[in-house]
Image (cartoon, rainbow, N blue to C red):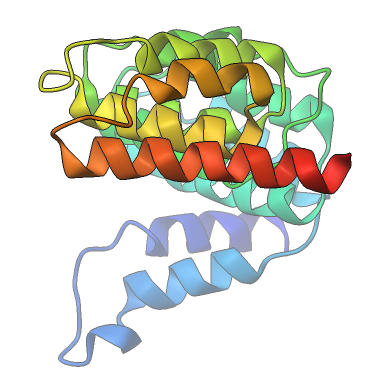
Length: 215
């Protein structure tokens, strides 16, 4: 696929018209096609498209380009482009674009040499949509900084205000946490909020099971 065909695909991905049979809509078919792409050679082309589409009017093009980058990295991880995707979190400011980027990042296995500072920063965003997606994305990296960012939310005592943040952070520690995280998770096992309690219990069980497998 060359740059012209890629641009056509990106434009098709932003079309909002849906046919009577929504599964055959241009929008959905374009996204399915994008998900099937498996050519790392497209990464520099996508980067060029993003950097040449730096206006608000073209933010949907950038959003779709990020979607394809994440999809390609899920199949073939290349650290420099993973870092590029994370770094773009510091450039975009639309909450829907950021949330979509973070949802894509959440599907990856991030290498240890990728600097996650901007991802961690997003976990404290004032915009809940961004914050929630960022917390979920922490599980993509089996790093101490990801665990520490999750612990921040698990440590919150105001379960009513931070219900979702705690639930998502519990799930992160369930995926990448270690035995020392069990104590902090235990503070929520008697919660009156069912989802908070169950997510904490599940996370503890996951950590114990993982430790048993590795022992």
